[in-house]
Image: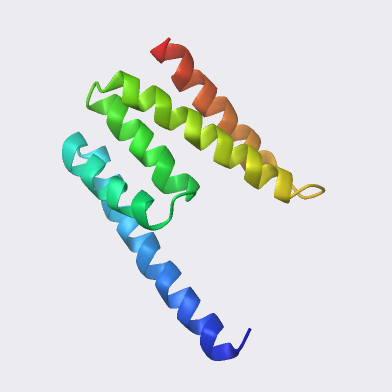
Length: 110
């Protein structure tokens, strides 16, 4: 990959991260429907982005849209499992922690 391409990808990634942060802020402020709209846009652009999908699941839960939250948590679980499989031999503690958190949320939605 050329330096120009790497720099461009990183710039897009940073802008995407800022947008994820904005969506998380809406969720933390209790603006669940606005957070859902923002997370939905992000997930539409980057379908398997773990943080955006996890935020969407939490926003659905915050909006008491429990069926959608349950479905979204299941999707996030699949994305994490796939990512963990790609990182065999590496420190997978983040993935283990996220899976435990998702399982706890799913248990409250059962």
